Image (cartoon, rainbow, N blue to C red; front, side):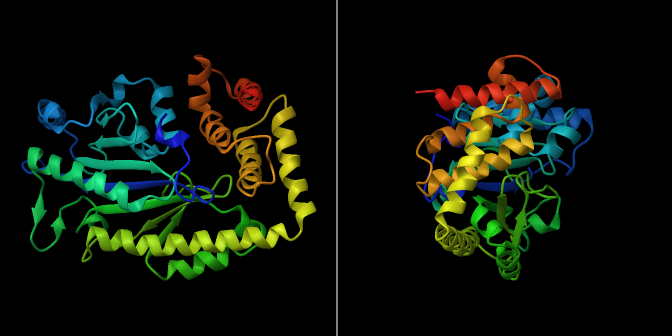
Length: 337
């Protein structure tokens, strides 16, 4: 089972963890646009693919069908900007489990990403460092004694590390404490973004929490600091849920109304389904809703999104057709044994 279909540590609040390293190779210009330079970079990577290991396979973006590419964006494995802006010159290395994905020629030559379910910063970092060191020895990175790893964006210099945790915060939203909590943690050099990262909005009460600083601090310090902040957010969210639980009837009513709509709808938009799923996940995590498992909630989060919905049915649909098919898919998953 792929990582994004699993539950992990503290997965009542923490949905997933990602570690990303920005790296550039020696002997290549930054921000490659010339065809011959891009081919040279790709060939160097492909020639060393067997030695890198981890079951990674090479794909050019332009050779992948659009639905497959967008399904990876929906799983937060590829960035939307990479697919939209670098389709003709970008490529990826990815394994079958999809917990390792390296974007090639995005903003930097390599964007090394490792993912895991739940709240698992240390183990995810260890795997990312192991992979990063192997790639560095094999391919040769552009490094400065003064500035660390050299990157296209100055904000990524130093370690080139961006650690992030996706969190589900319906309790803080319902108790109207979310802005207060975000304002407090914003003073600690932490970024709070929507579900698809920079410039994206939160859908279904899901937010991405990540470090801002990467220069002048070690990888382990970055992860340690982020872990402290995310743990505080998790505790605040759980406290908010306890507060909501004091008015049991209102909370149960909200959860079961959302479950009822999902169970009985004949058509439903993506945004509405994700907002209702937020209530349903809250109900499942609090033990209010016993008619559906956490694994089914995870499945619904992924498969109701447009590209993954179409991959599930093996066909392409217009927007209105997707709304009908989404309702059908939800019913199928809910009655699965």
